[in-house]
Length: 117
Image (cartoon, rainbow, N blue to C red):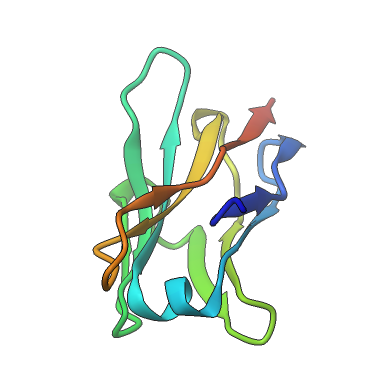
């Protein structure tokens, strides 16, 4: 069973929006720091947004005011709402569960986001 399952990537024009989803168990969503990372072409993987177990939100400077991370325990899903997308947001986006209680860190399989002009 894959612990983190992502969906929602795709292609969009600059200025558009996409919403990424990451389905996980309620235990993971409750006891782990959840996050979204991305790796663009020829770039290092970078932290995009984090959601702590205390519901503090932490964002990379480049996405502040445009992206929002949140979770919904009703459907056991972590989301990343991405608005005002820019070409430089093009990357493979990964869901991550970190600093979990009694679990190792986990990563999703990645979902491609492509922003064009």
